[in-house]
Image (cartoon, rainbow, N blue to C red; front, top):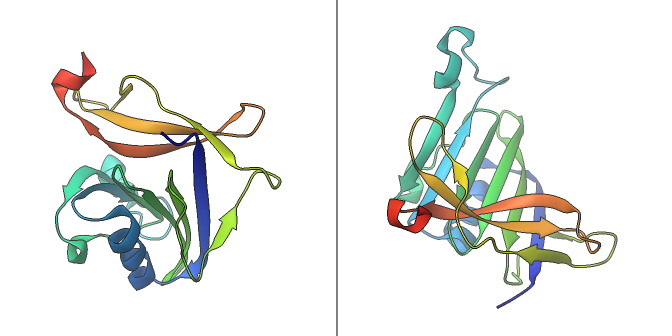
Length: 159
């Protein structure tokens, strides 16, 4: 099992490029969520500005509206942050090296990312008992940098 994580950045990607990255590296089915706090926010909507974590079976239904989003599976995670109308800053995280033509690989000052896999899913969504599985991305000296989501655990797997 790999102890190295890989992070790639697509700068100024279009919404279609985000969908292509999810299709190519995360694969379908996957899990997705996102939301708005600036671009498409509706102040009176409160929490409705955030999309809950849902299973995605069709890439055509991937919603990239709002300010940010995530799509993830055991294969990879694609994260996007909206820059303007149809321009996104995108990170792709994977435990396998990927060949992404228009992406820049990110390292920790030239060193690879070290990963660790918790034994048990521990992140709980508010209001229910759904737990998320994840991988921790750390700098070479062990400082936690990112948490890559990898899936949704069943209730049996949480106990």
